[in-house]
Image 1: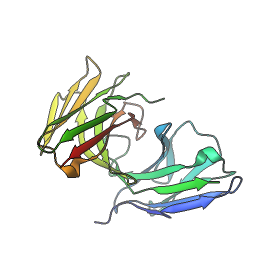
Image 2 (image 1 turned 120 degrees about the vertical axis):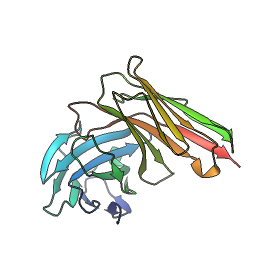
Image 3 (image 1 turned 90 degrees about the horizontal axis):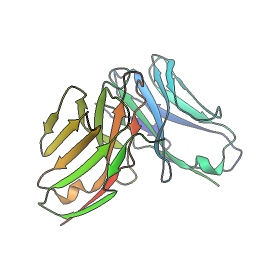
Image 4 (image 1 turned 120 degrees about the horizontal axis):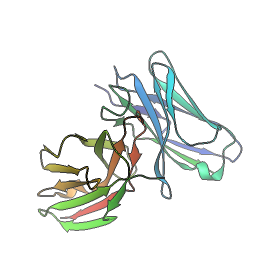
Length: 114
Length: 112
């Protein structure tokens, strides 16, 4: 079974631009979560989607948004990029909803904002 | 803010030795999970232990959970150079859904 796939692997953007990151979960997994990882803040939860519905949202500004499609694939978007948005963005899928099943992570998208 | 705190922040041992990492948390949990992350890669799930469990084993890994002390430990026995990675604990509560709260991680280096 293929693992979680995130594209692109690396991205360089300029302040003020917007970016869209993509995530394909493991086949059969309906829950997709997104996390931001930085050296200073560690791993922070962004949002969770289950069956195309946002089930949970972290403490991030409205510039961060996401969606999930009927095939469970998910995208996250960051608008008006700031230097502090530079991070590794990790997507994870799970078989069950809600923290009761292990998360399966992709290798992430490394976003650099200049 | 991070609920989990891990101790030590960094650990360096020789191949064949055991490595113990500790995690403390602040609120009641539904379960606690341990993950490994190799540099620049995604996290890999190691073990999930539920709040009503006290100990769990998986191969060379042993996890304990003490809910009265709000702490957990991960023991890796007979370590190998390939175990070099960062190790994170993460907690899930009854209401957090897939919103896991991760600790800051322990960087383990196993020297050949």
